[in-house]
Figure 1 (cartoon, rainbow, N blue to C red):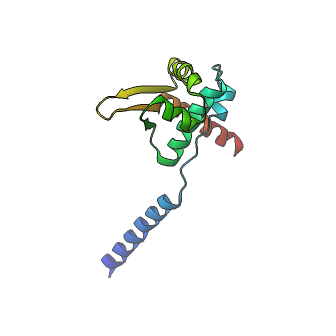
Figure 2: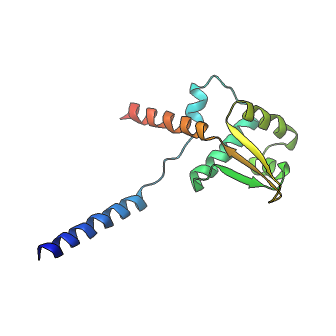
Length: 132
């Protein structure tokens, strides 16, 4: 009888853990806090590119997107293709994003750098601690 109760309790505890993991919503990262605390200033095109990548990260937890060319990226971000090259260059220089050409897949991989994501998460945790 003791063994059965122990097994039932353990299964109930594990079920609660699974349910809590399912109901927890992942924290939604935002660039707002970073912009307030950073010495780096971004123009509208740069902000739009980063916001699209952050939105994708919030939805999929994937740090990158794949696009067939820079025109597709410009369309996805809602920016002018002529402004995109300089925006990507500045974001790469500021260690915010990376851009790779994947010849094997015939596309570009554009993503947020790990350190930038960590900065966003750190700032969010700081703000949450201040609000409590």
